[in-house]
Image 1: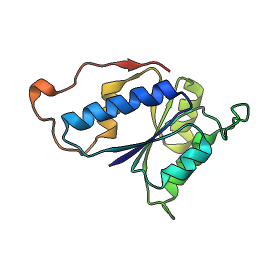
Image 2 (image 1 turned 45 degrees about the horizontal axis):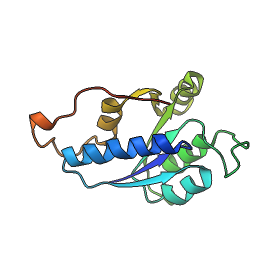
Image 3 (image 1 turned 90 degrees about the horizontal axis):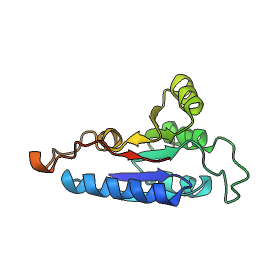
Length: 146
């Protein structure tokens, strides 16, 4: 499985990477993690991803002052299936209006920031092998800051 993390905040990308790597280890799952900080990077990487975790607000290009709603374009790429094959897509944001609109208008899976890491990882790894043992199960919720 290949996971693409799209977020302009490097620290959040790193924290998500670490959580995904930890859960992959616990589940004996093979995972490759890709990262994108803006829309051009996301566009280049999305074709290689099975799962996309996308921030609700990130730069459309390298200039952070030019910021429309690039998550909607990434979502469209994930759903089109024309050239890329369909991807699982989730939107992460601290902006409740953005999440409400995404859920209502586009039927997008959403995770409000700060989010419960266990809930997010359960969504990422749905269908993966069982945890190695009961002792190694990660059940405690950890919130990741926006």
